Image (cartoon, rainbow, N blue to C red):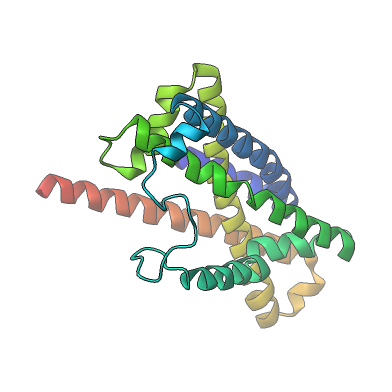
Length: 237
């Protein structure tokens, strides 16, 4: 994971938003392709779609849950809609990409295309879990469902592709965080505190690159500290 963070940090520092967007486009293809392969393999091993659906508890396939549901009562879907609207309309990861478009029209088409790419995620994230209920009923840790499906169902070549997709997702989230954090601090704080830097564009870009490195080292430091603390807690237990 440290190596992935370093690689993502390096191409973010050297290439900026352009490098982040190009790599994210490649990583999106890997992630979607690997997830679709995983979904098809899981459903086939479970006996097919109809067998898998018939084996689920009553009402398990419905998104509209009763008000008494302890996890997601149907009024909660309104909150999900508001949160989704907030995320896709104001999130720096997405807004920054829209603002970098060559024209307003291109930005609009990009937003629509990004929304379309979110539609399959409901199926490729949920369906493998439904299949796992049939294939591994004794699996007690939900976080091991996807890794178990990957290593049990996929041949080596496809396993590598799916793993590449998940590693790509991690790198995509990291490079977007680094670039967005550097942009917010540079444009909203540094540029206002030292307006003379705006005329010296290279200095402003250099400051943004320093912020990317600073953010990366801070994240790595927190990661090492958390791992060390958990290791010590396990030893004491």
